[in-house]
Image (cartoon, rainbow, N blue to C red; front, side):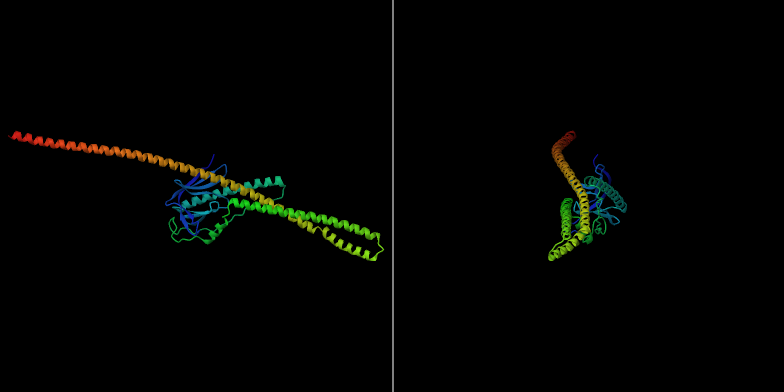
Length: 359
């Protein structure tokens, strides 16, 4: 079972001006039907508004979206995937409240789906990497709202949106594909840092072993004694230096620090891999939605062409009917003229017959 409509209403549709990002631009000249569509298989909600062959809104609700009521009859939300801000003007506050409640329900469902996905991804990471206790941060970015229309569903001339909303919208301009590339790059950098840290730890262990061997050998040389006082003094001095170095290595602070850094890097890699998996999933869903919308547009275009062909056929048939009607009118006019001529002749005969009777 695919998507099905779960709620519909009528509203004036607006989008933020893509050039100035300071004004509302009406998407339609009159109110259009705005509907919520729910896909139970994917657990996703979409807001759809289509007028004829034109798609005004095609917005998939995610966990980080927020619907803001900026006036008693106007509300808006930001869709970074569509790279725009949608605004809706309703006929009453009750209709706005109903739409806002449906948006909250859809957002809650998206959050539940995201949490379930995190749990599955975490389990998969544990199976592949062991229980590192990694978690995936799910930060939600809040944005300031745009200014609503001053009166009626349409904004007044010169009505400018809040600049903070524009700044917040700029932060959401990164697409899912770009986020995936960024996360992949960060993971590679962390892997490189982890490999370097492990190499340093290994080198430190080898150096500690080598110094310990030298120290033991030096202790043996000193214990065996020496007839050369200068050589003995040099051996004792070297023994002191090696002892200090060995004690510094044996305290384990450098090794502990490197091991802590390794664990921290491994944890960051696990977290980023979980986030990367979610970004890839979102990108796959976005591509699938794009294909569905493209197919819908193609179907709508095909329906429009069929309607045009049907309208053209009806117009041709209407022209034929008009031509027949004109012919009928022309014949009727001729018959009317013939009848008029006959009546005139009958009138003349009647007058002639009356004169003869008088005589």
